[in-house]
Amino acid sequence: MAVVKSSSSTSAGLYTRWFFVLPAVIFVLIMIVFPVLYTLYLSLHTWSGSAIRPPDFIGLGNYQTLLTNDPRFGDALIRTLQFTLAAVIVELLLGLAIALLIHGPFLGRGFVRTMILLPMVATPVAIAMAWLLMFEPTIGLFNGILRSLNLPPQLWLGSRDQAMGSLILVDVWQWTPMMALILLAGLTSLPEEPFEAARVDGANGWQRFLYLTLPLLLPTMITAVLLRSIDALKTFDIIYTMTRGGPGFSTETINIYGYVQSFEYFRLGSASSLLVVFFAIVLGISLLFVQIRKRWGTI
Amino acid sequence: MTDITGPDRVETSSPTLRTGTTPHSRSLRATSLRVLRYIIIALVVIIFAFPIAWMLLSSFKTQIDITTNDNLFVFTPTLQNYQNVFQQQNYLQYLFNSFLVAAVSTLFSLILGLPAAYGIARFRAHWLGLVLLTARIIPGITFLVPWYIIFGQLRLLGSYWALILSHMLVGLPFIAWVMIPFFESLPQELEESARIDGASTFGAFIRIALPLAVPGIATASIMSFIFSWNNFMFSLVLAGDDTRTLPIAIFNFLSYSSVDWGGLMAAAVVITLPVLIITLFVQRYIVAGLTAGATKG
Image (cartoon, rainbow over all chains, first blue to last red; front, top):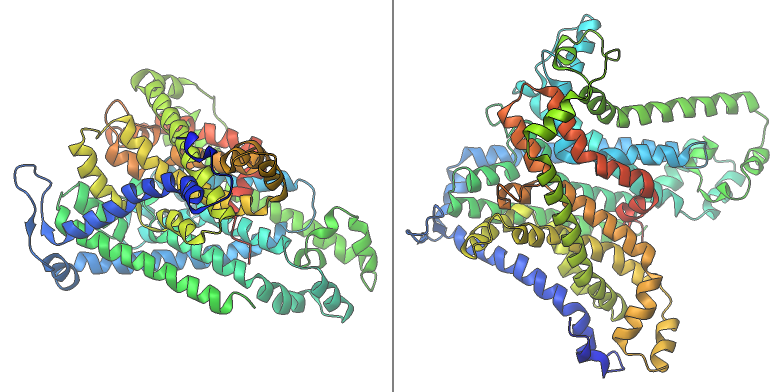
């Protein structure tokens, strides 16, 4: 970086300001804004990635096909929302319970925090492999346990009806700790005085939780749900490595379908239109949460 | 329930003080509640650690021990799976690739991200912070198709550069996310007095702000490294045969031989062990990184 340029300016003028942020902004523009515009451009064309045949302009044709004539897209969209909704709700409830549980002093606090960190820092592909082995219908641990309890073994990931639930289970295992740690940080930063006052007034634990902890924690909960929802909508690693969207598309989310269209079918035009719609959905949901946080998050 | 719902501040003073102030004596009930709490905490820890422990355990089992399934915990451990992984596959190369891409992309993200975060924090250019954070919101697949085409035209497809540049997009927003609030929390007086003594803005940044920000930088670097190390989708599309990172290698391993579970688990352990070891040592930083920005009003 050109250090010399700014060494003469002593005040934080416009020039210095840009000197600090410009390299990162240019990088982001090149790596994100330009590609997104390129995706927009491709979404108006039909192209197989061939160097000989350039993209053919077809206007909004891809969007029309996607929204009116591609049931796989609609199904994938519904599945994505189901996956996100189910995973995030369970993670919020479990995460809140765990945060309350490990809030406050106890022996082995650091150890417990380290252990619950492991699921979310462990390499997703690696833990997907571990879960594959546990879900395995003939040799897997889960069916082993069911058999020893004289219960009928299940197909888990091999069944159209159970595969999505199994993947949600993995996501819940992987990301509940994230929710718990964010909420724990929120609990730790709550002011002490209202709790003291409530105790003096004779409020019991449940009342303090309902009327103090929950409302005071609401902004943190909204932020945590926002962060988790954005990531859950985009879940790729565990789904693609464990089921590849199968069996029979039953776990194909938008992200998986977009990947398959782009890099397995090489229908780059229609894939791009799908990605633009996906982009809009994720952005829309993010903005919605930001609005929710603005309105109700500051109680 | 007293300890569970209240804020956390009492920890440093004295825990006995709090139990002493509870209105009526109910020591038996309090003790049994405490025991119950420890039992539930233990259960939670077991549940979250179990799949990783199972992976580790299975990686030392022979194929027969895994498939017969009679003795889940009693077996003669073997290192054969690890030998197979390192002999049959080019794992040392993949290990090197993963390390190189994670380290270089983290370094470059810091070089771009630290001045940017400082500039945004000091000159209150928060809309620019939002620009950097959009990279965290936008689905990666949206720019993966154009990257694939552009890197292909630049003959960079399958090169380390394609991987490093794409992984920087994972690291950079994270560094901004952690470092903007961190720089904002640093007192400005020291930099101002350095500037009065004749240092440039950039000199004040390098000599005053950066050394003070070391804890934040540590958090951001560790997280950026781990996210790059774990990254699957970008590498899946952009890596070549020689530049393949570990997550891609193990994914291909699954496709060839879905039968060799022991080998698969050994490979999974090889990938994730470095991350787990880092986590054991710097747990505090990781918690700070993951929860950064989420609790401020």
